[in-house]
Image 1 (cartoon, rainbow, N blue to C red):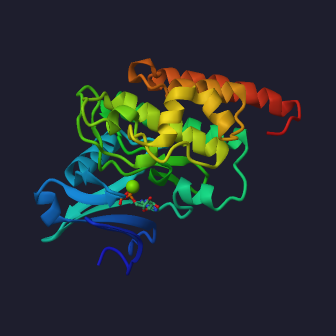
Image 2 (image 1 turned 60 degrees about the vertical axis):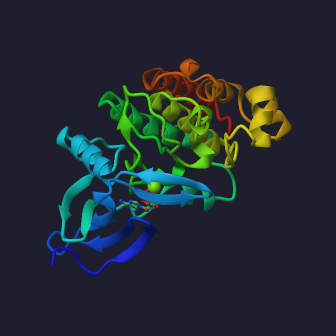
Length: 289
Ligand SMILES: Nc1ncnc2c1ncn2[C@@H]1O[C@H](COP(=O)(O)OP(=O)(O)O)[C@@H](O)[C@H]1O
Ligand SMILES: [Mg+2]
């Protein structure tokens, strides 16, 4: 017996995520347990509202293995090992007892400070920069898929929808709140790297304001229609969302309706570096945000 009895952290249609303890090292670990039957069909189906999401367990294992084979990254979940038995594939990860960033945001009464939001966001962008530099896109970036380490480092997980960066995609995947408009639009192929940038914009917006921007980017969604018509600045004013100008400017770029106009992850890392510098200067002058 390699691991002690485990408790379920989360369930999904393909299986479950378990918390367990390594009987030899006594380390706490998380095991993503996926049904082989589903894997042989190369996909499992999970419902997010009315939308079906196809997750590819093989892809998830491969992306995690590629990252680990190159030494891993502090902002990407650490895969310890992978094994199979007759019915299941098991991915064994480090366990992050603080859970995911959505749980963290929901447990707070007020939005976090700009400084804190930018710190987490910087860490997330570092993880995404590493992923993109390895030729992979995530396609399901969301607060639920960012874990918090003991040292409060943001750590990206869940590569079930990852794909090659240099190949246009046509699957309508990801969570409604975070899905780029061109991904929601069933008629076009899309650049997955630019779609990741939109999702990062949504993550930044939630970290800064404590609330989602849009429930969906489907053409029929009324709030999305307002967002398209008004643009970021007026949409936020109408929704009584208070954003500082420098943060809003970065969000305008990430949430550009034209995917080709969004920054690349490298450009975003520079923008966030500039923003953090600006706010740390203000903080030194005793301003509170
Ligand atoms: N290594 C881990 N440590 C702690 N919690 C985890 C870990 N991995 C996943 N979780 C929790 O389980 C949830 C689902 O895991 P995830 O890999 O995103 O699976 P799914 O494909 O079902 O979304 C996450 O949102 C997080 O709350
Ligand atoms: Mg997930």
